[in-house]
Length: 489
Image (cartoon, rainbow, N blue to C red; front, side, top):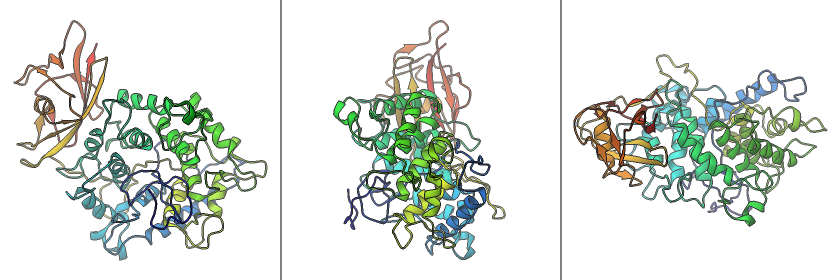
């Protein structure tokens, strides 16, 4: 897909106009990256060899935030039709600014968080032909803005929306496998968007299955691209690109893969091989540019790898962070896309600020400074008669089923039995639940999908990452709960 101004080839970028985290070749200004990780490396206490000082980084962050504030619409919006600026929420969070504190002319009724939440909750979003990256983008930006992505509204659960795109025929992939970056950003979104109390809401088994898929797509040179390469020797032998290597590193590290893992050390070596000695930039597919550099630095940050020392400090004393800060117009705060550009790019500015601030690709929202504003907002309960969805995994010890369960509640809460009953006929993808024993009542669940409790092996349930307990039909389920059923001892 190309931009209306596709007069010049461009590096991979996240598309807002096509509603997803889809790779595209476009003209300037650059399309964007995605937001900051919890494992992001703090750049406020850098070793002596680092060339950009904490003071320089602090100034860059302050000015960068000021520029992103200037992009807000008069109605308080960042998201909308065309090339949307909603990715600014991840950069704001990485830089320590709460989206609820960003309001046009100080009008708190039009703050960026409130307006964005309403945008996501609208029944017409994201359009008539959505793709998985629409929902991944929504998760990442909602979470960074302080909106619980599973509880945007009584009818909008972005976690469940994403679960609907699990590929039963190719377990581990999310959405069309040919568009591999949909799988990369599924990991980033699902691993990164924890509960309001900081608990991983999705089961590790689910992340692990997609981690295996990401590993299988790593190219021979240690990098990745936006497209599927698994099982194709020619594609695996092709060059990786800077952007997707940074994103894939973040996906793995955020899902629990350590920085010492061979997949990460090989990716690190790939990035090191692309460093330009004189500037500290990475030599990306279409040349040194701010967006590609931002993605790579965010990947390093997410893995806890300092982009200012060791392998990323060139013999000329330059680092990737140096390059990014050199791309900034001060005091205006915007970042140029290419070194020769005479004006800032909104998309380059988001990518650069997130990276300079120490962010990976998802950031927990900072505490607001607006009086009375909570750190999080979320719908609190089902609305009887309003259709909704819940995210469900069923792990029988042999296979992992993943689905979004659609149902219409009759009260402000429901039960696990009711959710499983609904899943037998209203799950996407189908086949998640084929049978439940017993089929009524509130007692202990003794069988799911033909697998029955035997000896020490039983069905256990976990909700929003809480400790697993014996699965019971009467277990209370609330709006937005992420449910995991697992069979074992």
